[in-house]
Image (cartoon, rainbow, N blue to C red; front, top):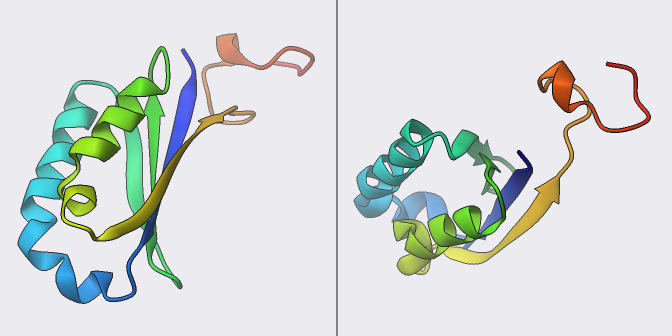
Length: 102
C-alpha cells in the first residue's frame, strides 16, 4: 500500500496560538493512527511545521485529515501539501521498489 507525506507550513505565531486547539489536534492524530492510516507524525523545527506520514490506498485519506484538522480549520496552518512518498529503506521487504535488492 502506498505512503503519503502530509506537510504543514504554519503561521509565524503558531507556537503561541496552538494551545487551545492542541487537544483536539492530538485526538485526530491518535484516531488516525489507531485506524492504521497514520504511520507517524511529528513537529518540524526552525521554522516550525509538521510532517505526517500516511499509508493508504490513495492520498484522499491524508487530504481528508488535513481538511478536518483543528490547526488547519482555525488558521494555524498557512499551507499544506500531500505528496506520494516512496520508501526505499525501512518498509517491509516485500514492498521494496522494483530494481532494488530486498
